[in-house]
Image (tube, rainbow, N blue to C red; front, side):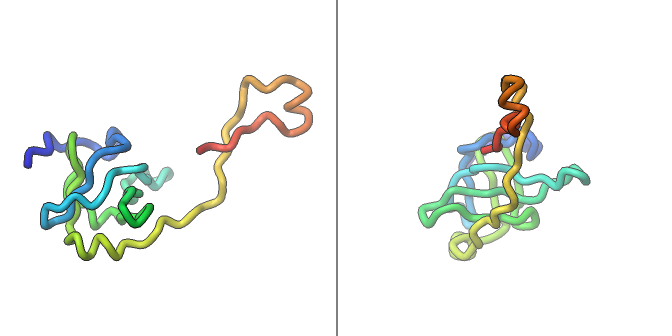
Length: 111
């Protein structure tokens, strides 16, 4: 299986196939997690048939253009935990009008 050349986690796209160490497709990438202050790869959240699952960075063997390969088997991948939900994140809403900002409406929740 040709998964392309190795790439940085920073350009890994949502929807990329995730394969176990034994070659089975276990899901697709939903989002990449990074420790912001340290600028290091923290893991990925994948979509599986059983729902969202968290894959910790040490369980990721290779990130490539067309697939992510894990260090764990498909059976082990089936035991991955659900991702923890952190506090909500907000971003400034520059399109909010003056009155809306006055009443706290100058922020939007990130999805």
